[in-house]
Length: 205
Image 1 (cartoon, helix red, strand yellow):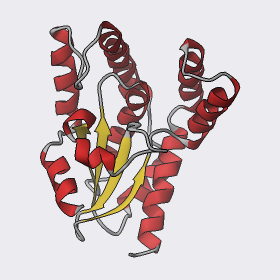
Image 2 (image 1 turned 90 degrees about the vertical axis):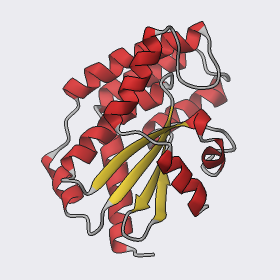
Image 3 (image 1 turned 180 degrees about the horizontal axis):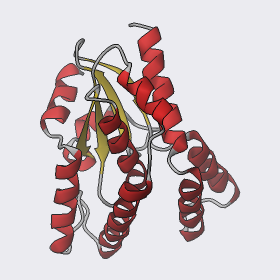
């Protein structure tokens, strides 16, 4: 497992570089990932606009920033993602802001899911390759401490309810999910990840 994570890290990118790769592919009319289609490219374009907006509007509270800066160890957040993923577009800008606010306690790295199939297979959600998936690695120990994803609890509950009541993912649930993220303003992601990091801090493995 350690070698699989190491391979994922080797194949990963800083946030700015990840954004550039997605943007450059869009300029060629392509999306990231093994599958190429007009719909995936259109989703990538929409996500590009969302991320540009979120980078300007998302803020990290002073309380969250202070707690991140006070973590005992240094960590890598290795995130499995793709440019067409709507949840990733909502979450990655928050992760970037948290990493920047952590005073170098957190190093954010992003790996493309389809380029890291073996790693993805170890972090399935209910048997599926759902993304984004965050793998929390302690730099000092060199081991995985936790993982999180693909979306905050409230968003997951919204999706689960839709699947029970309606069935397959449709445009309505995509819109409802977008509205949920807009109303939440990135707070749930911050709180859930901070809880994970503090549990690592106080429950040493």
